[in-house]
Image (cartoon, rainbow, N blue to C red; front, side, top):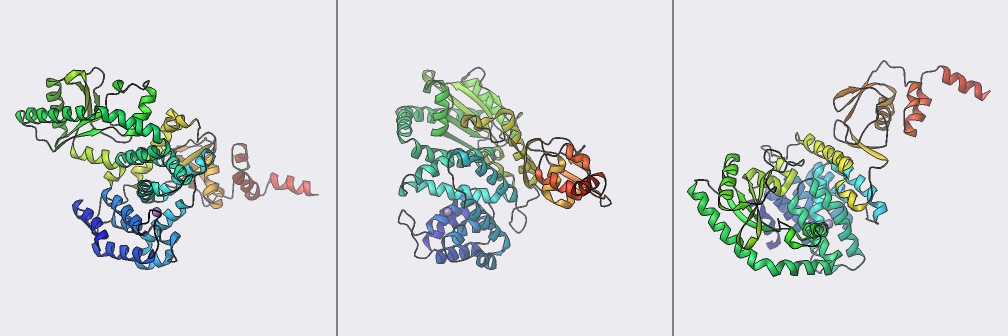
Length: 486
Ligand code: MN
């Protein structure tokens, strides 16, 4: 089938290790299930899951994820069930599809639903981050074909993407995808502004393109002289939505934005990166205070590169980004770059904690700097906190909750037998107030006779309070209750 070949070619081009017969089976299964269904654009429905799977393959996701991408709309849109999927493709693929189906049931209904949506995203992420990637790929194709839909559905999807999906993609470091999600949403939400900005950029574009290609030539020559091998050298233009937002801060002056065009130089080693920087500064005057060494000091999300802005012809400026192939991969696909495959070709999840920590840092940042939430004038974490179990599950509690609230949230028995707690691997007293991002582990004592009434002085949740009262060992409290009854 010609359509499927596009996906198989990406798998070959990206050198992904997977069983292509299984991919073929999944495609045929989806094709069969969606038989006779059309997208709003008039195309056969199966084009949509196929495009979703292609995006996932480009992000180097594993076989199960690509299969789940192909099947992601089957339970929702056809008579074929999740258990049919499980029978044919196994439990893991079925669970991914189930995760997507659940997420799909969440509808964006404006800012008041935002908190709930974000919370559900966190929980889905904690269950399996691959679900989020399938959702991103699904959304990307929906945005690419958004013209086929009518208002207000179009606006809802674009706004939801801009406010929920893109910030999460950003934080996971999947910038390529993030940029495309944003620009497609931008085009639909603010068509006039989008066109205006595009025209303004195009007016400068031919000049800038010439400038870049002559710079490329000069740099290549100079680096050859210094014996620094070049893996890749290419120009890129800033994404429109991020440019639009920057312009709003910078008084709408295009001239004050220095990274509209950037030249990326990929060289084999870190030492080569610094040598290349020397070559560049030797040839062009660097702009003061624009040199950023993200190799020595990576961004919180792990991004690494050297950035410098130089003056070139006619007082124009160009940003230069210098990095190794490994850094480049991380910058393109973010957190997915850190996954690795075992002999059987499936993703190893011993790295799972890494992204849990990433989320932890993110939430910390949200509290400290309130980055993207600031622009929305809303503090999602105003009166709720998100803490993690050692396995990476997200637990949502009221502010100032303690380990006892956490313990009862997990299970009544855990609460009743709680003897101590570790917060972020450090022993902490049971009345310590938890903060968003904390990883909490409850130490239980099987010989414990039940909860302590003292806990009532500091617990915050009603569930914990009720259970402590009900399960505390018989003593004064029961006596009082008994007396009251009489
Ligand atoms: Mn879909």
